[in-house]
Image (cartoon, rainbow, N blue to C red; front, side, top):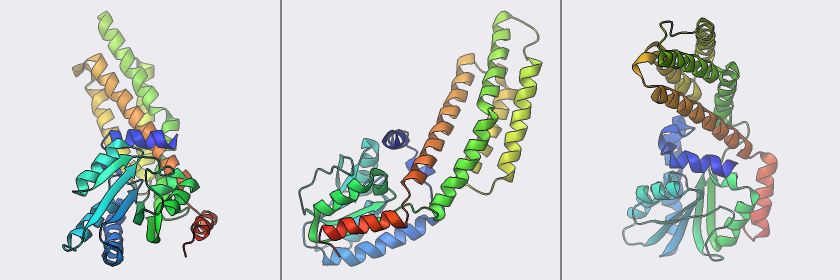
Length: 294
């Protein structure tokens, strides 16, 4: 389920705009810049650096910039992700890099071929086998660094906040109420009736819109709050001007918004499910120690 959720996410081209943790983006970039400036200097000429579960290639882009500052050195940069769209995005952000569609737990790399492996909010989705796979691919003097979701951390809390608001509004049935009201109006229009609105359906839609607006207003700042504020505004405009639209266009837009919201909920749940905790980190540490790494 998780893999499919993220394939759809990247294929929709939403990655950069809807990434969780946007408020921390500058700090993440600073972390990777410091990491690569230090570790590229120690890496051998021609070293292979891989971004595992690369997503949009945020870490790989910083690696490319840092490598460019070492003009006398040559490095090979690679991106691996389950989504072809994510791999293409990574390559575009890191000119000269290569990439391949691959599960983090089954990398197309030889044993001990990696000088540096990194991942930003990605490899944890592939589970513990992915960490064992990275240990297999790392050279004896290789370095692995990952920024991962942590249970109870800032990004996990942000996801929980988003998920709570998404669940609350979904339970109100706002999409069903809007769908019923619009369909009844369009049915009556096709019949040539003068009374185009069904009073009961309109009352229900108005009530649910008010409840959803109150929930959004009361919610703490979050990506979901911003998304629903825009959606409710657009939905209100559509409901008020529904006769200006063809049936299929209006109902298609509504179905698309419902699908997008459902997918967003799926991503929040996937992110929270993948978050590591102290026990998980201990297991990962044991994996690398058993592979001979300190």
